[in-house]
Each structure stands twice: as structure tokens, then as C-alpha cells.
Image 1 (cartoon, one colour):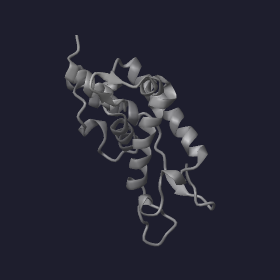
Image 2 (cartoon, one colour):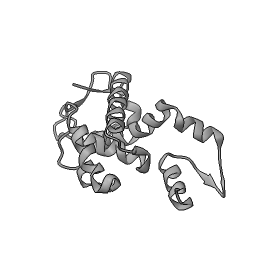
Image 3 (cartoon, rainbow, N blue to C red):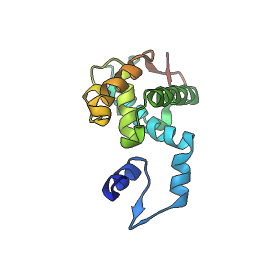
Length: 161
């Protein structure tokens, strides 16, 4: 049986606000839809991508987050990233990792860092499930995805190769 404190924590990690002993049905329905859950992961994924990637088209190679935001990411990159996140979530489920124990945006952030080979990510995060093995397993899964290299297109949108 799960404690009330742990339940509140898991609901918060999913983006569901608990007010006293009540939650909004619409919050639960949005999170339970696969796309809603994956889009929460996508938020952290794109934030990490922007602050950790450089714009190689400018002289001083500024980080993308200095002049771009999530709103500048192309539809093409958004669709591909959602597909990658869906595949990642499926592989984590197959490895019997309960992702709902962890914050969705942190999952996205660490997925980006692990897949990009930065040396950081799931392997240095706070993933204590399965006797502390979740972090290493998630890192291995994320590292199996090919590296993505974002760039700014002529239209000012961010794409990836």
C-alpha cells in the first residue's frame, strides 16, 4: 500500500495538483493520455537541448537558449522527438521501470543528456527504484538512441540532423 505522502509526490511528478484530498478529473485525464505524459517529458527534453547545444552558424557559437526558445523548434523536430520519447518510454516499461516515480521534465532533461553523450543524465540523477538500478538502466536505454544535432534553419526554426 502506498502512503499518502508518496501518492502526493507521484501525482505532483505527473503534473497533477492535489488540493486537500481532491484532484481535478481533467488533470488526471490529460496526464493519462499518452500524448499528455510524453509532452511533459518533451518540455524538459527541449529545455536541455536548448541550453546544452550551440548555434554553430554564429561567430561565437552561442548556446541556442540565448536567442531561441521552445517556440522556435520546428514541427518536424517536435514530431521526431515525441516519437523518440514514445520509444524510450516503451523501452523503459519493457525494462520494468516505473517512470511515474520520477518527475516528467527531469526525465526529458536526462533523456537528452544521456542520448547526447554528455556524460551526465540518468546515470547521475536521483533514480532510486529497483534498488538504485533505474538510473543506469535508463542511461543505457537513452544511450541506445542516436545522437541528435540541432541547428537553426534559414527560417529561424530549430531542426536536427
